[in-house]
Image 1 (cartoon, one colour):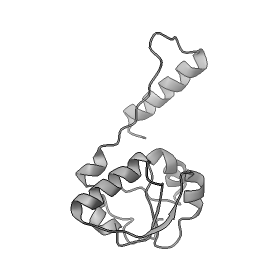
Image 2 (tube, rainbow, N blue to C red):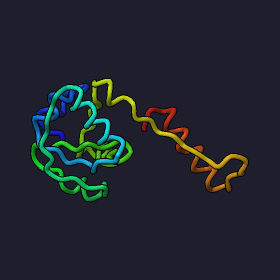
Image 3 (cartoon, rainbow, N blue to C red):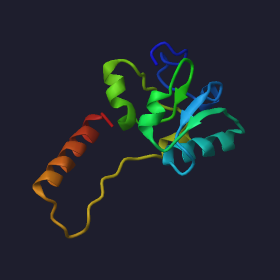
Length: 129
């Protein structure tokens, strides 16, 4: 949220994030697993307010001083509307997540799928993801 004490930072460190209640995906989600790994390496503990594998449920439950652990694609519409602020992690462990677009080898995509692939590639190149 724009009024959160950490919202104006250019980057966040996990040591600062764990001071707040977290709304986050369950274990098994790549972002969550990287967060847990980083906390383990740094000897940090955190309080989970809510955890779910449904991003729409998580988005609706962020209140007050809560922080949401989510990828940019999950919250980009809220960032564009100004109701959510996106701040990347500075911690190296959190930089390991990458977006990949995979297709079946030797299969020619339909025109609709090809258009989708081109749209995603354009967003990746523009830095929107």
